[in-house]
Image (cartoon, rainbow, N blue to C red; front, top):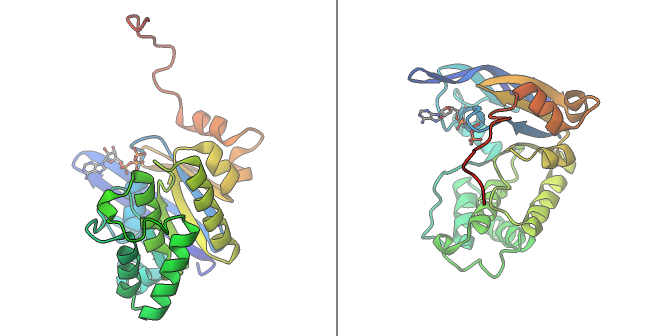
Amino acid sequence: MENNALSIRGLHKRYGDKIAVQDLSLDVPKGSFYGFVGPNGAGKTTTLSMATGLLRPDAGSAEIAGVDVWKHPTEAKRRMGVLADGVLLFSKLTGEQLVTYAGLLRGMDRETVATRTEDLLRVLGLEEAAGKLVQDYSAGMTKKIALASAMVHAPELLVLDEPFEAVDPVSARTIRGLLDAYVASGGAVILSSHVMDLVQRMCTHVGIIAHGQLLASGTVDEVRGDSDLETRFVELVGLEGTDQELSWLKA
Ligand SMILES: Nc1ncnc2c1ncn2[C@@H]1O[C@H](COP(=O)(O)OP(=O)(O)OP(=O)(O)O)[C@@H](O)[C@H]1O
């Protein structure tokens, strides 16, 4: 267990009649870059929310570096940084204030927070926007400032829900560089994404989820076998709505 930055066992969540996540278990080894992929509505956000203490599971458990998220939330949260999908930020703060606030909330001293905030804003290309209110940021800038807030306390695990959504290719490359350096220094990342090519290039491990169940997991090479990840994904998940045409869709 302790070789894992994140260990999920038997997580289960139902919304009314809908089972969103079904008896799901997975491990993210320390020092790994884990891609969590699946079609829309597969249960990625629900799983990551339960694994990070944002959503209470109906059953199952999650441990961050051996610490139970639901039994010892404060200790577990100290060890992780979370970029959640659709969670509101304090948008009346400036970018600099938001990252500073995140650091102080984690009990860090002001001097360290100030140095790290400056470093993160520089690396993420947000220096000029540091004094601007977050409500005036573009979608991509908002992702970057949320990522900086998740990293400022140098956690052991980063949990990132769709970190590249709405991010332009130059910024995406910046974020990739930052995450690669973080993993090379011993951190672990789990990120959800729809972009197979990106997961194949960036990640060491991958888990494929559909209908709330994990269909495959392991190293990227193990899961993709002789083909590429996208082909394997489509084989496992199945195509939808193929061969159907819209007879009226003509220019
Ligand atoms: N609060 C909720 N109430 C009811 N149903 C929900 C709720 N949140 C999620 N669901 C349902 O649970 C299922 C899993 O949703 P989830 O958001 O976890 O999927 P996802 O893999 O993150 O999807 P996407 O890639 O589209 O973001 C979906 O069928 C969704 O409609």
